Length: 440
Image: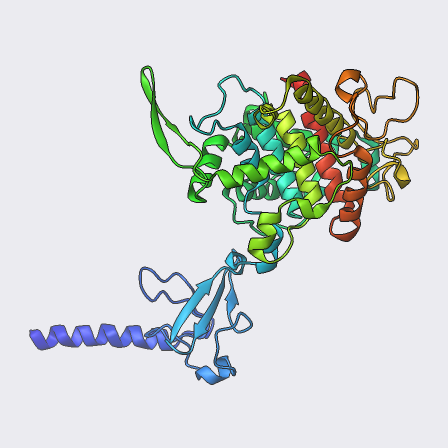
């Protein structure tokens, strides 16, 4: 009886081996429960190719040239030293050049850092603007990292600045969770305008089919990211009936650097703008200068004013100096929330980016700014002097960077490092944020 059972078992094994050996070289074989990768030329017993390893990879090293790429983009190679197959995603490999070009903190984290109370570790309960602004900062950061841009379509000039469509020009992940989440969503969705994306990410829609586009718990996720970077720490505070996690400041040097960038643009005694004065700490740590430094500093100023967190950076100033700085920030936002940017700066082409495809068919700047650049009281062109509504604030001379010098610095970065459609996307987001008071 035992011999009959063993004979049947041997017959079953033999039949399995025979059927496997009769299979073609393209048969798919599952080695075990964890192996779901088809073996193109593999032996069913070992799951490896019967071809000598030297013929598969003459160099004897694992290379994507000899590996197979899956539908998801991962690459499977053969490690000669261990005899194992190795799978990796080439998109996960660090790009040292890109890491050096980007600062340690994203634009969203800088805005949140300005809004947080240093000791208490939470935002003002009365701030209704920061959530909407943070969604706009996500789009600006993606544009600064060359991931998105305005669609390269000549017909876009028929539409207002904020109604122009956005394209994903580089789908590579950034390593920042919020940015990657937004980038994946934009890649997998239909093409939409700048204003639509900011609204949908903020949950400002009546379309129940698009509720899933909302990015949730953005402030808390940004705060946890700053905790991971060692800038904040986590504590629990009791608020009457419940406990709430707070994030007091742990590293004051990072916030001081953000404050310096804002104050340089608003309270500097010189109207000139030097790129070397911005992001010096990030440039020294990475060994190479941060890309688009003046553009980043300008976006930081405009977004902090829009998010209503600029007051925290100006508390040490006198009342008149603080009001003057607020008016300066308002004027800068109004100037650069157009395309071309800074139309009153006197630059060739009508402003930053005006050299190519800056004007509409009628020859007028394509902008949705409600009132456009305001003229001076005496009818002359206003170039970087701030608003003339508060004459007393400017009795001692202009302070802060002038619009003209900012425009020159941005135009230089656009010519050397940037892309006109990328800057147009930034201008469109700033235009949305400049009209936020009328939207909320």
